[in-house]
Image 1: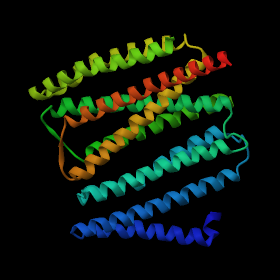
Image 2 (image 1 turned 60 degrees about the vertical axis):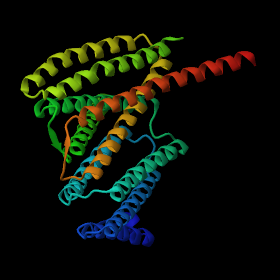
Image 3 (image 1 turned 30 degrees about the vertical axis):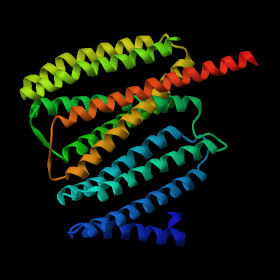
Image 4 (image 1 turned 90 degrees about the vertical axis):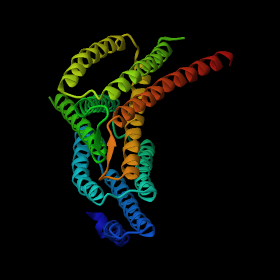
Length: 209
Length: 146
């Protein structure tokens, strides 16, 4: 929690939370202008949150000792992030469904947030390449790629199975609630992430033995 | 044409043939309003062995490739998986915010979403393999001339 001692980070952290939470009640106010307000507010909060997360990640990496059970730590870190994101995302998604928000500004806001996350991931990958000591050796990198490949295959299998089951049970001319499609997609990602985590833990146990 | 390029072209053509077969099937099922547990069972009986046989054949073929080719295949697959996931996220978010979370959407959108995602993912994978092969061929040719 060293980052909390930094005054700038503390202020940024509070502004981010205030923007994000402050945008929510504004959605209830009707009118086109009021849709743009919460969208800008929530997007701003989200972007600040992502920037802080990236900064924290880079700091924790700087303090790390090289080759210290990297694979296991990465697996746990990713899995815990996924679980934390599930809890956080569940409330946000439920809120967005309940308020039945729609419209181009909200869509753009959401896409901006997703794009910021994508840019963050790309920046972190470039930062990893710049490190003097590589984070993973060749064997670990191979195991990571293998786990990711198994996770992706599971996700694809899940997507096809979910689509076929929904299509067959509901009928070709039927309709599904809109919220079920992102929910199905998210459960697929959760399933894929869990499989990836289990595979990585299995590999680390094998190498420990 | 080396075996990687052959594999890329074969997979690309196979996906397009599969889509050409699947689109009329889906339209027919949709028009008939095919509904019920029996269709799920039929899908599973047909789909599971097909997927399993395909997977085993693919694993057998994978053993024939050398390390360099395997690395290219792994990289292409991971990029195509990311493209597939990003496409699905984009599609679902767009429809969620355009239609509204409390509304309904025709179920036919689900196969449309998944199949277009597969086509885009497969195209990415095949093009990445072809680009990589072309790049290596160019490097070999330039090295030969120098």
